[in-house]
Length: 285
Image (cartoon, rainbow, N blue to C red; front, side, top):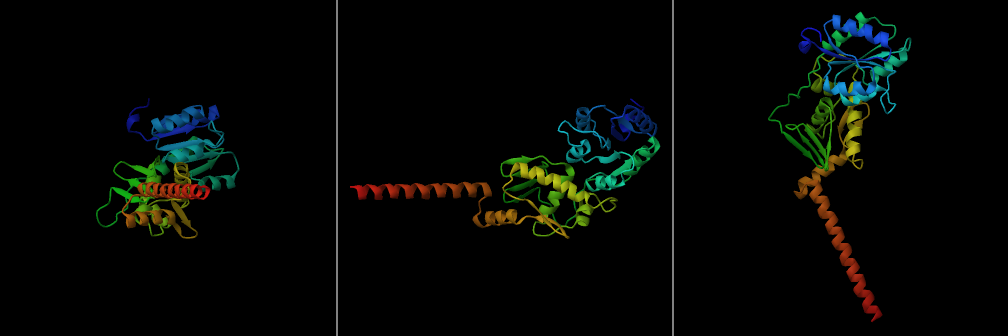
């Protein structure tokens, strides 16, 4: 391990080509980074969590075990800076990479010095996830119908299911839930979550909210949580707001109210069936 590696910024390098991987690993180390450079996608995914990299440098040709591009899988699971290395001469592809969540993208040929310089540039961007500075004390638990956000435990629950979210996804949803009747613009969400000095594509918000929506749908696909207001931004959906309003009116949480409604419907059905049976018996008698 290089000297003082525990204090150095960490780079996880995932490149298929052995020569390119070795030259960039050497270049990053000489530039002061602690580098992990596994040779297969499974190891990359494990190290993306255990190595806690500050920057992911990913070859876009690398695929995960599900045959999905590895950089897309990692973007779903981590908030680390993502620098994609793409094949030569595909300018349009680099634009699409940036729009799909990459923080930076370069094409081959690229020198190790440039890769190291781009990693340093990414590290200079503000990435601290911070709470928005609203007036008044902050609730530690936000309940909106079936949706519960526990900021103290950093948990999201939808109905009976817990939703695993990254720090950025959690912070975006928390911002929307603290002002559930308002529309939040991309710039407002960027300033709240990434900080006022963020430099990058504003559509990074869409990427992280899209990932969060998939996780929420997996927990309960019968209710939409985040609604897109075209050309304006994002807000909490009417379904969630209606459920929250019903909770407030009845004084019962959503799950208890649904159980009570189902019980009431069963009791009505049982009475109807009993009444029908008695009526049938009377006619036959």
